Length: 412
Ligand code: ATP
Image 1 (cartoon, rainbow, N blue to C red):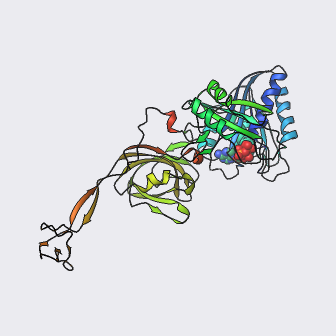
Image 2: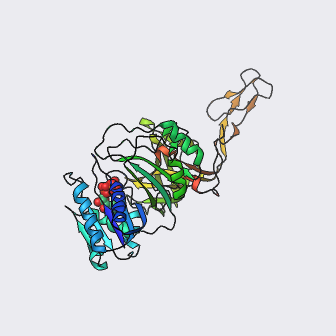
Image 3: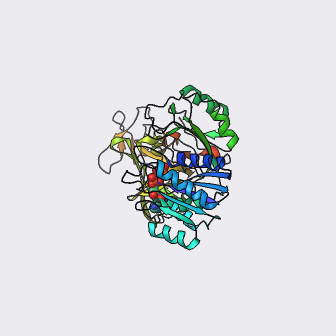
């Protein structure tokens, strides 16, 4: 069977992954065979989400009614039901439904009515609390498919604790040094920040992402911290680009995430707050892209683009602009500038001789009809560039997962 749970937390506490970890342990204690525990991320642009739009799916063998009762009991006991936006859902399916609803919840939007209709049609056991929105994520989780999969080791502390987390930073850097590239994004070396320890009021102590259960467990073994109350390794769609749809400018839907081939249409602009705007063109349609301030050094890549550069970009489309997650520079335009001609008599740059009259050397009166064209070196090479780990979305596939991808280089 598959057991799906979603929407149990609130901005002031809890986390559906914690509830999923407890349920997995409880099922095992009761003699169920638990063969998989999945952390399924859904559309990151859904406004109802508390934090990372996660839902849980547990694969197990045993009595479905009992599993359903255990899951509902845990939701009743632990979900923050008093919080306005907490609307849990639990689904138990005897077998995996088709993946269509999962793909819709991952790449687009679903209504609560659609979730109810799927639950009824497929004959699953289900329960929703309050407005029942959690049924969307719970059903999507049981319908999930993982054609590409990564793993996350999540260590938890007591959910009642709201003290600052005690996780030794240098030990996290040591974990990454010993296990990268098989684990990633525990730290952001470029910005010298520990990334895998949240600052939100939930029971997650830290989370290690990587390519296999053994690698994430090995990395966790390096970490010195307050004692976790429990831990769980999840199979997940994180780091797989599963949210990305091939797109064309002019045909984008708000709240979806796309990969688009385009040409840079104007020089990038740095705006107030350090956000960088980039206008691109695809099939004659202009599209605005943004590299926001939290993407730090990635903005320097965007700032080096010029009109005529061909790029492939990825990111979420919101309020008329793409929030960049990654770009590939496919080809670079020739960067030319016009400058006043040099005097052949060695007197330096000539100056304008007046409107439409070309240039003149003020010392020897040598004349030139037009400015000179100079070709400037480009300050980056073709290839992929990504936002740093501190700004990475859960679903975005880090370049380290794709050794064949050509990496772009900054030219100093
Ligand atoms: P939690 O740890 O509780 O899962 P979260 O950040 O993952 O926190 P939720 O509290 O689960 O966010 O809120 C997301 C809500 O949006 C859930 O009710 C979920 O069912 C719903 N939802 C998820 N994806 C979609 C979607 N694509 N369309 C509509 N609703 C969605």
